Amino acid sequence: MTKYDKILIFIVLIASISGIVAVNSAALNYNNLYAEILINNELYKKYTLGYGVDETIVVESEYGRNVIRVDNDHVYMQESDCPDQICVQMSKISEPGEIIVCLPNRLIIMVTGESGSIDTITR
Amino acid sequence: MNRNRKYIFLALLTSGALILSLIEGMIPFPFVAPGAKLGLPNMITLVVIVLFGFKSGMTVAILRTILFLLVAGNVAGFLYSLSGAVLSTIIMAIAYRYFSGLFSLIGISLFGAMAHNTAQVMTAALVVQNIRILSYLPIMYLVSLFTGCFVGYATIFIVNNLQKQFQIMKWS
Image 1 (cartoon, chains in turn cyan, yellow):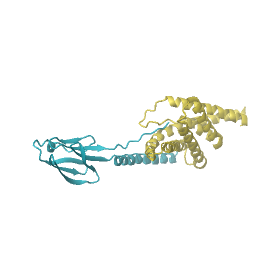
Image 2: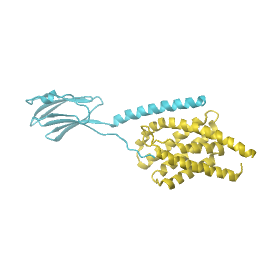
Image 3: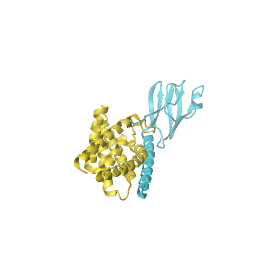
Image 4: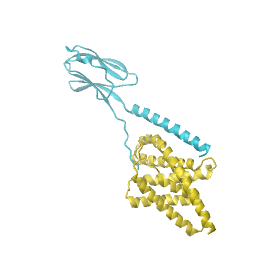
């Protein structure tokens, strides 16, 4: 094994590891997360999470009034006029599949995601 | 070495490469990357390039893939293995001819393994019409580092022994 072999191995090692890191971070970007607000099982609004979103959404429907905060990568219920206040006490959600429900106001907030996975065929 | 001897040697090496690719298919590869292989037939290609030159190397590589198609009956994999074999042979021949002063056979076999992976993934991207498959390349490169070093080491031993053999054949 010559000196140049070692240099080549080193370069390839660095390049492949940085490539893997770059691909992984790019795959996270593909993996968009959305916060969906449903009222009475109908989509009311949809927000893309991440990218520094900072919004307060006031939802006034025939069932009641809710104030929802979307803070960058997580969502939570700030205020609600429902009697039990369970939705306000629920923790912040940020992962796909997590859900906040305000049953008296028939309001559901859920986080959904697109998977950016890749299928490969090699042999 | 006269022509007949050369052809016999090439035929023997081709059948050896065919058997190696069959054995390789039986070895489960214990790494994270699915589809990664040891690249044992590359060993033979490199040996032929070193001992007989680029033309013979290309012949052996293409013959090996066609024979493997006939033996294993894996039509879907034929395009991938053919493109990989052709590109890696070209790259290894160039590397051996112009950079053999810089790199030992280990470095050259590394080039070959990387070219093999590149060609296969490119072919896959063309077949599936999805450029995102290229994101598989860095992982394959990382795996090919190990397999390429292994194949290079093995090739050094084979080449040494075969060269001794040729010396004996010259004297006899």
